[in-house]
Image (cartoon, rainbow, N blue to C red; front, side, top):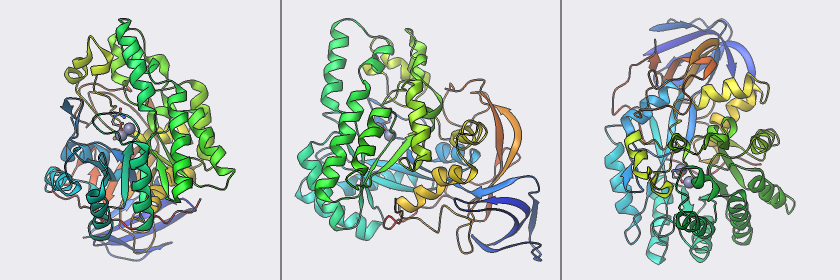
Length: 460
Ligand code: URP
Ligand code: ZN
Ligand code: ZN
């Protein structure tokens, strides 16, 4: 199969120009003006933006969590991602405490093989660190192409490791060229606030938010940075939400430390006023919770200052019936938010459209930096000769509305019902194949491939 894309405005993290793209097989073969190739398919991209397929490095597909499982599996989740211009996702494997990393890997391979439509990779969440696990970490880096290791400083008893385990893990990961990522919130502080609110009969979703004040995230982010500084390990903070946590990383830069930071689209566009004192607020019960307007300002600035390199989603959807597990107690509401489909279009409308970020920055934070940090660049994350032809042809003027009636995620509500967006992913290619056209997915379950990853190549 060959595809010629004519006259598109090609945007990468560094460049912006009008040209043609010629794709043969799975990769980009030629870029230039007036390319003279005969292709199986020609797409006129005049007036359209052409940018690299999005990479969402923070999704939870078919993940057992809080007594239930996230409602998108690899098929529905990666299909929804493709509709929204995201061609590659990185999901989290969860080690079961007391069990091996390899058993967890096998479990996730069964969930994804033959099911994924889009390309995918895995982070390994280490929830129980010991000498045997240390050996497995090395094997994952050297033999499986899994180079990032997720840790939790919260969710005690299920996912959390202590600071001693964290430091030991960092030492092994550093030695073998990997990266430690973290859910940075102070789990003990949060657990005690949850207990206090429950004992006072304060049980609505609002108290989920009030149990995780900004200081719980700021403290843990600073502590994580200190442990990275001590061990020399490269690190990445997932789903940062607030000014206090960002300032902890800003302070770390004054000792010339470099810590990668991700925020998520919901923290840039939604705020804590959604936690009204009724159960509707459960739609936005996620951890960390939504924050204040001043935090949104800090996060957008952090992106432009280069302190935040990546915008992901932390996509972790639950059906309304599942959210209702916490109808009478906020601490039982499964934490998570559906967003995999909307990240690129939200970032375009709210970021580029409202003048908060440039088009190049948009590509950098939705695709290129994730590819570099997580060892997939330049195969993924850019438009260049030899790169995978993962491409979005984007109509910057098309207006549309977000709704549960039209989204493709397997979840029966939308956190963005009725939102008006300007700019739509019109055609999406994955490795030179038409994935999305005419609002239809043309690829089948099993098309998605596992992406084996290498070392970080981003310097900040
Ligand atoms: O609320 C969230 N974020 N759910 C998914 C698990 C996590 O902490 O990322
Ligand atoms: Zn988390
Ligand atoms: Zn997450």
